View 1 (cartoon, rainbow, N blue to C red):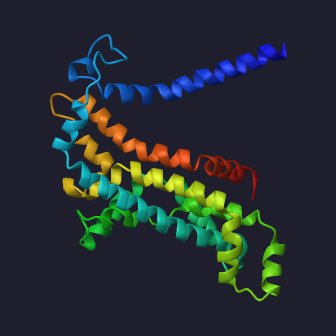
View 2 (tube, helix red, strand yellow):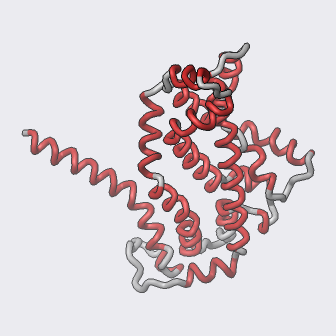
Length: 272
């Protein structure tokens, strides 16, 4: 009976993996098809002959190197600054006492209850007043702080015993030394999780870059790939090839930090 139950669980997990992985495999295989094969009915999974035309033509259609560079710059700056701000804010809300702490934290959490699209108009007006339309800073300035990241790291800091800080204070450490040398190494799993979440969001962000930058040379990958869609016909292999090239860095990042990511997500759900 137990053996049958285990087989059933494994079968369900295998089906779940297949459903999850199939769209990715379809994207990769479609990038090697011709335009005719990609629109064939009934559809075919494997191309008749693997071709690299879609990958070569995408560099002719888009300035892919510039777009890739813009995306990398935006992702690195957004991730680094957001993680720095959220780490300090999470430590303050989780370990320090100051007037109005709970009220301020509730206000920050309330941001999570508001759809992000509501902020697009005021953010655009601010960027416009600053004269930053169609510039690289316009891509990352609105995303340098995260309410979710602050909440996530606050939970990690709250899970640490108070005795660590008390012992450090007795040894003559100030708050900055406690934060940098004692607390940060202990919440490494949470920081890695936030890095992956933030990098993924910045890398895949579509709506804001599409609105604030209309110059193709100042676009990121997501909105630039939308330019491959024609008015009367769409180059599906080209779009799939661009999507494959866009997703590879995030896949590599996840596999490098897979252990820390899973550990961070698990700990954030059971601590605090």
